[in-house]
Structures are given as structure tokens and as C-alpha cells.
Length: 174
Image (cartoon, rainbow, N blue to C red; front, side, top):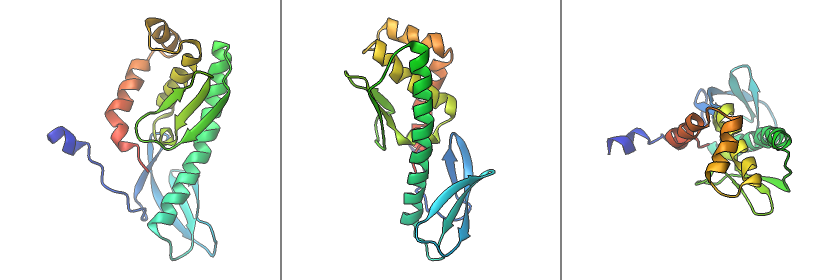
């Protein structure tokens, strides 16, 4: 019970100064009120600046954060996927990024790669491990010793990165 309670994360209120993860670093929300229609988020120095109207709702902020995260996630995951595919001399069919609760990534039989949007909350070296893991499945569709040898050849700290995800997955929620 102590372990379970230690992993409970308070619900987000999406209010000023509340901390939100982005690439493994906590950033406070800072609000900038202006007469705009759509709430937008940008990273400015060490803060996530929320450009919104005066009468915002938590739901609007959550949706804006989700858009911000997805945009950054798509860009970074595509860049890293292309890098690892080039390194391993393989090709993928397509990348899909969506918010799911139970997996960080997957590779289909026809080499379509799927990634969890929540990866944008983890440190980049952990995200890189997930991308390498899925790209390695293009070569080896299982978790055999050959598969793990491919991963280990390109990430000597993959065990630590894998452990970090297991230990901290409860923190990776918007």
C-alpha cells in the first residue's frame, strides 16, 4: 500500500505556476492573457507560457498542452526514427503518434511504428531508447537475444532507460 500511495500523482488543475513535464524537466505554467480565440502554449526559457483569454478553463489549457506536446513529439520522434533507421539501414512505412495508456511504442508486421504522445514528458535519452527499441523490431520482430543485442549495440544504457520508464510511468500524464 505504501508503494501504491507513493506512486499516486495529484490531478492537474492547469493553474498558474503548476509544474508540467516537458522532455523530463518540470516547467511552471505562466499565463499571458490576451484577446485570442484559441489557447496556445509555448516554451519560453524555463516556463510553459499559456497564451489565453481571461476566462480560461482547465479543459482549454489541457487541450492546448495536448496540442503542444503532440506537435513537439511528432517532430522529435520523426527525427529520431529517421536517425535510427539510417543507422540500422532499415525503412519504416509510417509513424503514428497517439495518447494511449499502456504502451510506449509498437512496430507492426509491415513496419508501421506507433508511439505514445506521453513520451514527450520523459527525458530525451529515454525517448531515444523507445525509438531505437521500435526501430530494432523492424529487423527482429521479437524480444530475442538477437533483438536485445541490436538495442545494446546502439544504447549501452538501455537497461537504465527501460527501468526509468517502469519506475516513472505514473508521472507521465498530462
